[in-house]
Length: 391
Image (cartoon, rainbow, N blue to C red):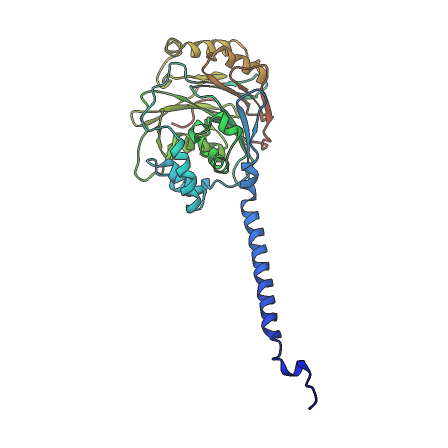
């Protein structure tokens, strides 16, 4: 009997099956690669933001460049839950599973801030000044008990670009933690736009907040609610002049989780306004002078003599700028702010030129070694005239 070839006795090779397997694997690989690319595109700006943190040499001041979307439009429309600001902002910024993780970490590290903090008698000074050649300056000292600060540069695509300074204590950061941030810490940095304390936007609008006892803001059920630092962010992202900034303030129920505050706002056209919340009313105080000063005492309804008697920093700053006859620049404003800074309390000093976009920020009264920068300003940024904003 003749031998039969082995190939004739073995079952046929299942070529069709393996072709299907290879095609399926290739399709899954393509889907995975596309998914990774799409995810990378979606989060690349946030990744750039989280890894942009740098320390300014010889200080505990840090700089963060923010590129991603922090969903302010949603917050602007709906407000937040002021009884749970961390959770509310987390849900607006991040997917739920990630928000719960990050917010839980933040809350674990934060000190209780629900009880009002009684500020010392030296808790911030803000000065607005119109120069003889039509430039508007705003200087601001933040006097408080914490240490590190963050300069936040917003590189906006939809809203306004801006620069702001904030106290990272309210995200659970100190200098040691900012020097060696974990992955969760880097996610926390995405919340920095929500806690601005002073700043300037590309339209030439600048704002500083100062503590003020006796503040009681109006409440209207139809209006969305925000906390005080969010009001600053809404202004920096949207206001083109002082009037618009005041309108934004009027459009929300304002809540103060820790220290009650008032604000000084200025624009590139020279219009300034102190905004205060007294007995459930919004009170706006302007000036016909080329300058306006605000510290920690009510300005509404008071004379200049009363303001001088109420606060030595107000008296010293106002006397100094009143005698300048319009001659002042950014270094000169730093000198003004240095004269009313407080040893062991002034955390940072910001000076903004609302006309040119130039700014300088000094850490802990080191006025000879400032962090400089320039914000690209939009032409025809602000429009208005000096005086009170709104009725």
